[in-house]
Image (cartoon, rainbow, N blue to C red; front, side, top):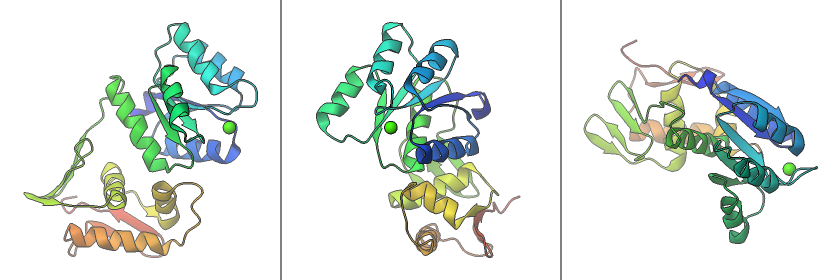
Length: 230
Ligand code: CA
């Protein structure tokens, strides 16, 4: 199934997070539905065949937990990822007791979220998503987190891994430093975009990226993956 056929319902009232999710998920090719109120979200979930729900717990009208419970009581098995600012273990457990499949605590990075979305869609058989990404002599396995350069294992930090995964998923797409910063560090990260250059430079070193570079610098803009054989 192509990502464009996958419908994700976001039930969230915080405008910043709504925009962050809408933009990011659309960029990944998903079909995104937004409900900024709990009742409206529940209605959509009850009447539309969505493939996954991203559900905030603290909503102005009804609690996200109630929505989750209600859907499960009605026999709705849609995969649900709970977004929560609460970090206590009790809250997490009760979230999963309610029938949610996964949870993610705020603040989160888009990368972390999209990884959970992909994993959950894979688990529920809704997406024939590639778990092994390849280009030239680089192989990245999303599930085992292994990266190989030819037959040599490459050890990357989580940030370097995320960057490489993003490039491999979108060959030739130009990513600005701002986009990369946002993707890796989250919507509330107010850092210098130079940090992106630092991570890219470490990544290039580790994969021994020699000219003509696989991860190309797009002057004045950012970076793009440019496979050698294309
Ligand atoms: Ca909220």
